[in-house]
Length: 589
Image 1 (cartoon, rainbow, N blue to C red):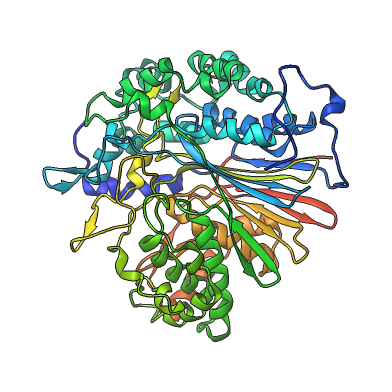
Image 2 (cartoon, helix red, strand yellow):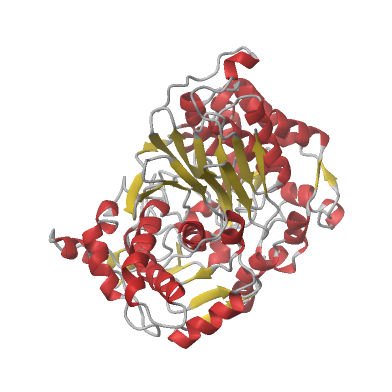
């Protein structure tokens, strides 16, 4: 493939916007559960709900809930379908983060299913001839693929929280893959896009080309597309558990695909079969009388959502401009993004001051550092603010961009347990390398391409068995009585952070319903300018207000969010699915 011109690379992000419309439960036995085995327990009387990015996936999860399955069961079933019907966003060739809330105990468990780098790489993963690769070359190379990890996450979460039979979780996806599924508009638009066809090798690799471009033409809306190879892979997983995926046969096929040119990767069979999910504590912060909980590093959500909400409250009383809420929101984002870019990385390989970044004493200091709207914002120093020593000089500056090939699922089951799960293959269609019916991720492009800045290592430099920093922000909010209040998350690359924070503020501060908050214009303030979505009602007014305040505003007709929200109130559950994608929220009484 010929190198892309710079204008094509710049236009790629615009294309993404245009393509829119543990627990007390044990794992299941080998028998199918009788209905009484899955009856609701406890005093929860608000029903169940799932919100996901595609109707057939949401329905697969809803059917599991109707049968009495857990929130974890429903999320797995929905995601297995998404890997088939929304392959541009996620699938079993990628990874993700899952927050699980167990109502009976009040426990929150984080399953870190982030992909790991091969053992054989070093920090120069994306350096060639002494210079960093351009993004597209790295994206489409074998070097971009980390160990596919979501199936391992399925297995570990289900073992702790599953109520339904394991094999039943894959029945809907297997049936759709065997019988065929109707291609929906969003997938068809991606495949027909000239930018996608020029940027990726999706129509050049023999396997992916035959699947997505039969007879050389992209799959059209309404086409019925089967995927027998995916069905066989899922059947092996359904019968054998995760070992049906993490075995030498599948690992061998993955390694062969990654090892092919251009720029072959170093992923090995041992890297794949040795993969382990990390079970982590949630990162929770106080906001007003509520608690916000998210995934800790290497995810960004736990740090950034607490920071933005905390800074917003501190900035609001003195905010300037015709709309002080927007000013405070934008300034809180700019400060948070600068800190996130500098400090967040894999905590098993570098020190990440996550607790320090969300400490109220640091937020008090950080709120005074917002600067002028037309000025640059650099990272703060939580160590200095807290009197525990300099932290800012531990790492060089880093602004690695994340690409928005991601999905989000929110679930509450009949017992009031909840899942917030964000999963991804990274860029659209991942690395474009297809094996056994699924696409492989390009997750390692989330590492810093330049591993040092001014001779100083950056926290998010590549490394053997290291997990790249992620913007994924699956989030759970709790009220003043510790009862579950909100389940939320979104795809969207580094903009996920802004999308989720906007929705939390919209519902819990700006007086909006979940649907109104989701549909409110997305406003993203990372770096020197503020990006405002003008294709939604209120966007043009936000542009005027922020420009009048002095911010450098870039107008965008659309954004790439896929927000899926469930609000718990006195009357029950209120769900919302982002109209920028094709999702739905389904409630079950």
